[in-house]
Length: 311
Image (cartoon, rainbow, N blue to C red; front, side, top):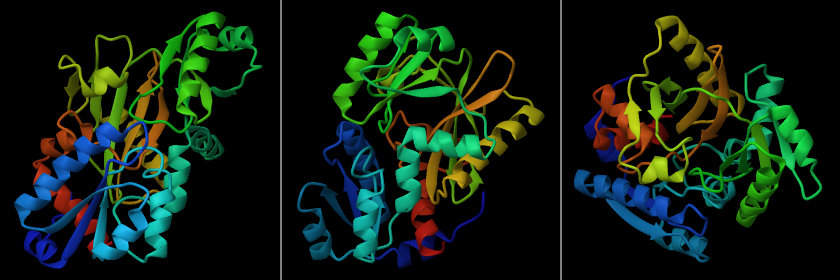
């Protein structure tokens, strides 16, 4: 990856405000990510103010008068273009993607529609409603993954294989109030690739004994196996990276993001989603991937900031 001038970044960072927490279902993960990044900024000597985002965020931002914002808000309000819109109005530079890319990436249906239009492979899907034909969907998909359309951190996700379990999973996922979709279940390995300012990090292979990669596998289970770099041939890795780069570019993403995808039994790759504010916890994939190429956590944070200063 490109080199950065560490001293220059530290000198030019100015007053950084770190946003974390918020009110989305992903609040607790956001707090963990935010605390990890804040600790790094403090240790680097960056003038940093941490804000747990609530109703008075606009007034707090105006009062803090930051030179730039590091956004560690996961989920609704922080990853969907809302806080990005506030920051644009306040003319404050911020990490991550802009309003449109954030909104598109947060909406899994819109993302998949764009990818399909661009010829990028993604699993078949349908939006679920109270009057959906549960039997017809199972007949078509055989097994399905039910997930909130605008959710993250694998919250509200279930794998189902019967009309009854599909309807039940739909009802439970409705509790996240984000719309619900069903996606054809792909039997095979799951991968994740971090991107920072168009530069790809090593792809990670994810393994879990939990049946599928749910919230516990991501953030709790110490038995989750993260293999980096993923054991793919050079040719297969090029194909995967082309798909990842295409997904990122098609949505207009910028700064740091993470692309998740699957591989089926025939060796074909299928996009799952793009996370425009990927986790930065001890369990998170991006820091682990960066470390594989000699970028420790502090340098990763500096690279994220450098992308704003020199982007």
